[in-house]
Length: 64
Length: 135
Image (tube, rainbow over all chains, first blue to last red; front, side, top):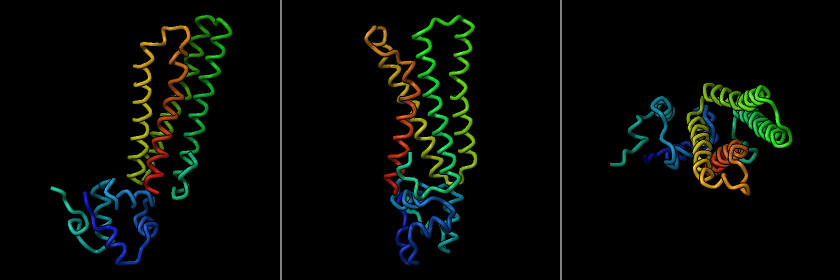
């Protein structure tokens, strides 16, 4: 699944490590999600949406 | 498994270290018991004792991994560990299938003595590779 995580993170000048710390996950997790290698669970997706003050649909783009 | 640990939490590092030690014990016990079997001819009762001794560290490893997975909050790492274990078990099955055709020959090392080594090598190398890829 594609996502806008890298863009949203860059807008806030956050490093992957910063985002990982805010989400309480490893930096590898952030990298795996950003590169589309790993799709987060719904609770983590909600945490991301809350953190970026947006909706899940605005972060993750469904590939049809 | 020290390769890509920089970004792991103390809980993850501690758990992986404990699991590694237990896997090392599994291999050491397996080598020791094989050596005893090759040099001596233990009685059936002793063989049962040795069999129990050989499975004890494997069960402990499973318990340690299960405890780690229960306490691991990072779903991606949880996923990686499960995937690595599956690769480890898968490679043991692959080797088992392969050796079942050749290990009747006296020149071939009995597969049973290598299964734990294959599991550890396959599981840890998968985990290391996946952690390295997402550095």
